[in-house]
Image (cartoon, rainbow, N blue to C red):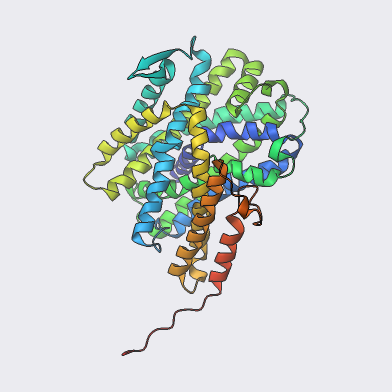
Length: 438
């Protein structure tokens, strides 16, 4: 691959990751963290940049087979769960909702008008927008071989230019005084930032996108495993650098938002208020373009990856029919509403994220384990076990009987048991081969 192709691959990877949550969560977290912004931002960068980067490298290291040492049923179940969460259940529909809230709502005269359909009330503008949005996603996803050209070399450079303009304005234009931290950001800004990074879902996405990129490289004629790993790692670093740049600027924007953040209950409102004040209608139009492009490219990546996966799992369903089916499901789920979708997704993410992080960890430790198959299975089992309790606690259930565990109150009860299990597995002896006739 040429340098231009490699940059295009990196830009495409960046665009796939930069979607809905990447734009709405950092400003809001920056506003709440206030003077503790640095700690919160560092925590956020761990799970929203560091872990996706490591996840992509893990996929490259394992040649796309990060779940190969798990039992077939467990590996398939985990993969299906990740693809459903990242695809039609949460992440993909959320891209359309955020694009509507920030990219379309400011230009609609009556954005909250309702209509009855099948005995239920629907937001007319939102319904029409999500249908159009996923129609475009459907069209782009039907031709995965052209993704590198259409997304990496055309859409993403435009997106990057607009984001650089936004980030530069945050640095140049004077902001308000940074406020005092509130809520959990007062005493636990680092761990709260780590948990907020879950909401981007990018560690889960890295396991999908890594395999998608390897498949795209094959379509480009890169069949050697070492070359695939080399280009995937390069793309990962390009994407991580872009994401870190965006997050740092958006965190600072939120922390210094001042009056722009009054009454805001999500980062999208802070962004819109900031841009409208400083740049007027032209700025609002530019923000709309940034958000729409970011969400569109992410949705294309998600629908493409999910369709590829389920096509391999169920060959009787063609790739094109799955693209159509998943696009329809995403458009339907999107009309649940943004706030409801986020509230439902958080307990699920608290449960599944520890498993994804543990999977990335054991992938790097595989060669150091004397019993790699057993180690993979036990470490992931421990992460899932405690992750379930974290998820139930987030959903509102009383999990006080686990208060003795470090970081339980912060929603990270899984961390210490999982890390200790991995360390113990490093010292397990090899299985002794049985003698013949025994």
